[in-house]
Length: 395
Ligand SMILES: C[S@@+](CC[C@H](N)C(=O)[O-])C[C@H]1O[C@@H](n2cnc3c(N)ncnc32)[C@H](O)[C@@H]1O
Image: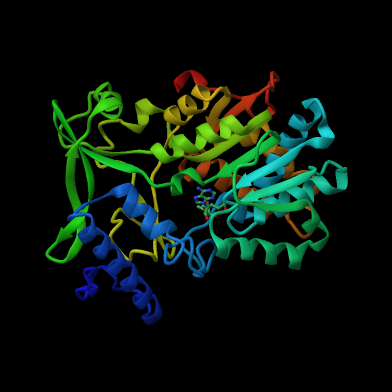
């Protein structure tokens, strides 16, 4: 095993404890690169630095989500986002063959806030799901979720079940909010009209850097070949997110899965203007495009190619039940009514609700970049979330 000492250049600008952790991660990646002959795929790198159970960003105890962390997500703005999903759930539940057997399954529940707020909305209406299942890969976040329920709503803990695998025969509603963007992606570079190579990670003067790998072949090359990408184009393929979608579609028995994330349909995703792809990293509420900065300490994401996800779902037997911007989905699910409803009680003043609505729906905030894709099985009903707009023809 290679154990040369690591220059701190890629680890700097953090705190002392942080530096030690990131040095360990960089060391591990150096070792891996050496073990693998000088090159690893970017998907392997992303898996190591984000999801390795020993030292990955999502596996360690650092605060990731929230004001003290690296980024904020829709559920953390307040309970308006959850209010809309609760409405959507109620509609789905009523149309199921056995509404009382309905479950909600949430992937990557982060702080647990969305689960708490959805259940809090549904509880007074006796519309609680039989189970609210959470499949969370980060042990630290499972603890955070459990603590949130223990402190805020211990009476709801009996409804929650943390699961390790996708359950069989899901009946009800599935939510994955900002989960697919955290899944490892393959990266590629177009050399010329005849050659597209995989881009991975190697060492340049002792520092982690991009390094070209073998030319792509087979179906992956054929897929990219159809896009007529310009020379020099670099981009991502979210194959892991596609496998995940196929497994989910397979497990869905009766109901709808909502995949909510930032991304585009394929024609926009691989637009020549996006010549450097969509990798985006987050550290203490600042963004950068360098995945080799502070490995293990910053989040690394890629936007979602929703066409690929829809194809993976339908090839696995699911129907495409709708696709639209987050703004359209939330408006169709009554976000504007929430400002004048029970949500706007003295403790949640109108101004605060309006702030959330703006953040969630305005085009230059989360409204347009974030999309909602719904996959369904044995659910032949219109979904309220797409009654305003459904642009699945663009997929
Ligand atoms: C960006 S955070 C979003 C958290 C939460 N959904 C929210 O909206 O606040 C990504 C979440 O997905 C989890 N995650 C990443 N990969 C996952 C996977 N393959 N299956 C389930 N959860 C995953 C992370 O641990 C984290 O909780």
